[in-house]
Length: 88
Image (cartoon, rainbow, N blue to C red; front, side, top):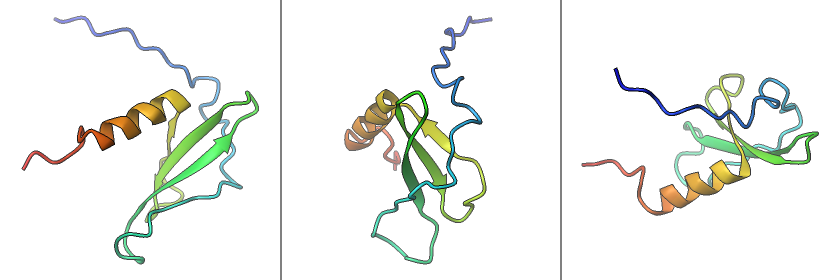
């Protein structure tokens, strides 16, 4: 059995406590305006950090991914570099 890398949870103090009720959800202008979209919101927390929340517009009450500023920067850099492009 291979040991996995240790998990560092730098959002434990935010989990379940990030107030999204007043979030200003943004989406791309591209694509079908009535279709599903990825939406993001920049949400400031009481710790002074602005986190990036991401959700599916078709399920606004569904799961929300939360990124720290460093995670968001890494995600954007990977997307620009083609890290998430489909292999075909």
